[in-house]
Amino acid sequence: MNIIDTLIRLLGIPQNTDDFKWTRSAGYKRRLEWVKNAWIMGGMVMLIVAQPAFILASSFFLTFLSLAFLERKTE
Image (cartoon, rainbow, N blue to C red; front, side):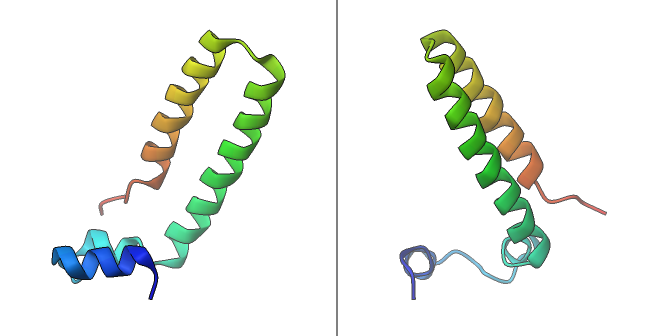
């Protein structure tokens, strides 16, 4: 059992909701891989440019995109 599953169990977070089930689906895991790769590429660009303002703006933009992309689509 990993640390996140232990915290979920200890905090008593309900695991039968649609939102929780979405985080265990194959589609979510596929999107998570896209987000991970976007952060790796963005981090490399930030290291190359090395301007604090660019790094801060890029971080905010990538955070927004990550949260928007991982959001579950309601039907």
